[in-house]
Image (tube, rainbow, N blue to C red):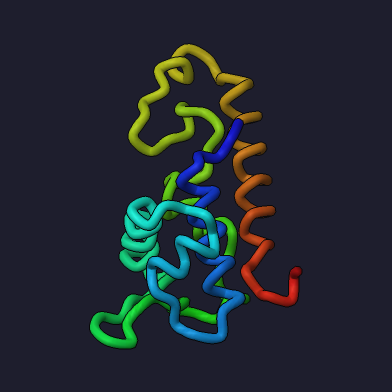
Length: 132
């Protein structure tokens, strides 16, 4: 399993903002994270829509975290881009697993447990700059 490039960039963007003492423009974030400005803006829109980042328009505008860095978890950022953390489609809310109707699927339970463990681990990691 591998997180998407977009999620990797979202983590970098939030980390960049967590380590900044000022509001940053999209171009400055893009430069600092080595993400193209166009892709950076796409990710920032998602982070803003989900309450992790807030944006400011006009002169002196830009982006900053909407919460304290220690209140933002890696799980929250991952789920903004990827959706719920599940390692198999059979765990997704919008998937109807018909294998369970015949018998209990052993692997469904294993996938569920592993997904829960991953989610818990990601939820235990935050963006506090002290973690450098």
